[in-house]
Length: 241
Image (cartoon, rainbow, N blue to C red; front, side, top):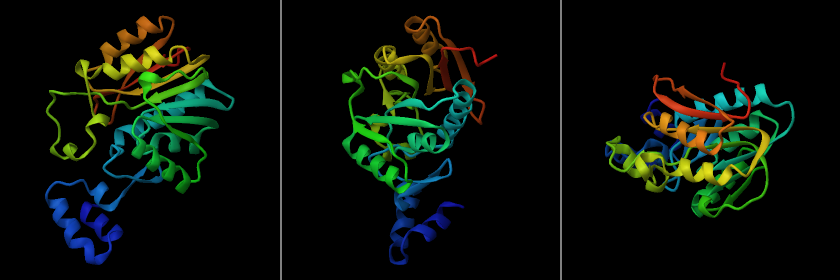
């Protein structure tokens, strides 16, 4: 379904002309209609959250496959930077788990809670700055699609409408991987899986950070549909042979 068809489907008739004008000015259609389909779920979105993308669906799909290989029990999951809640909702629907999902943005958490309710998924969404995370709970899976675009990168014009704090990161995009791995290394169960979406030139640098902090782990960089390095998995077992 193209953008005009989406507007005709989701926008009431007397507001369609204004919606089309906004679309022609480059405003994302997902914000105009207020939702996006993600991994089989309808997820509400607004300007407070990053628009879910196909690449992130692939992250979810790969993560589910690894979870099914690794665990035969109900697992505890932590998502860091949950935004709209699309990742947590997709995992909850597809694996046996309990999920804690945090975001620094209070408006994002309000929306993720709404999406959880609309999709009938029981998820613990809460406001938390990862810098101050001091939960002693242990997790089997930790997943994150953090901000990873370097501030000096050339990006698609449409991205300017999305929240900057969900997109850009210091240290050439590596900042939040360092923070997350430093924080959560104490929150891992004996058997664990960490799943990241990454920038296409960041895999090797993040691998080195992970090897330093989790020296006994197995690490794999994987590609997206366009053959760009887009995902990094860190695991207590070698699932990558």
